Length: 385
Image 1 (spheres, helix red, strand yellow):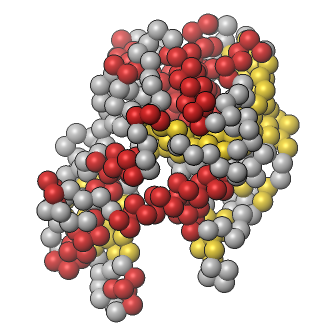
Image 2: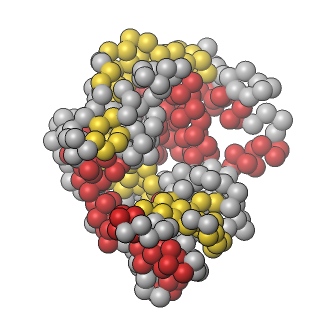
Image 3: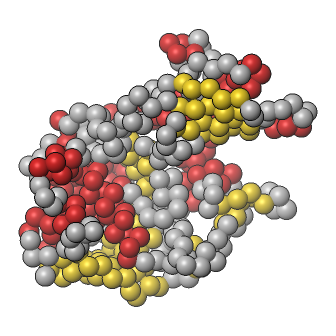
């Protein structure tokens, strides 16, 4: 067995629950689940081909299955840092942390609905991995992706639970260690270097649109062009731009005659007629609307929801990660894992009160427009191998 010891830091608040929801709890199975996601994202549809041709595919061998023991044993220890109840947060962070954070009328701010591990919490991840070189490298590559593009716990796709490796033993795996990048531009170069190490002789940029979240030629990894003095300011900037985009809304003359999402849903409430889904449903399902003016006037219905015909939920394909730079400032990485939105032929169900209607799946336009709204040109796009 090969042994590794990683010192890992939480860059942003980490919301992880265990048996007691009143306490935050960091457990090895949670980390293994996140690593499995990034392993699948790394492998792409090659994994499906492997499953169809092999008795035991690489994912089952690495992370375990009902028929196969896991090739990696993880242990979490040396947890330093306190649990806290976040409070007095602005609406931008409240928007990104919805669910883990809730609005408090008394203070007119957002607070955590449960304890979390505060930023700068450190822990040790010890890994015992099979001597199989291929499996060992796949574990290390999955960990790199998790700690550079992803996150752990609730609202991890919206920037919470961002992790960063700060030390690693043995040091010959130094590409996993703390970033030496001190600017967003240097971070972009560092990510490109890391992705080359992750994929080696593979070329994800040549892969077509996948049927699940994976790194392919249709993906987009971007470094935001500005850095920030704190993790709060970093998420506040992105959350504010997302809120602004939500209010402004994408428009598509091809699918909705120039209507905004707001106008389209309001018309659905009034008439029960809708021809296509809100474009912003591409950010994930369920996609909900609440019209406070209608509620005050008691004009029912004042709520509308959109979900898959067979799948209530569809995770957002846009992931936000916060990195602490060597300069002690903070940068933001946005990863767009463009993939087939739902199963082929599956409709979106629109519901408002007693009325329901079925429409097609949303186009990918909204997320591409949002990336442009952030000012992220190809200059800030990380090149895939």
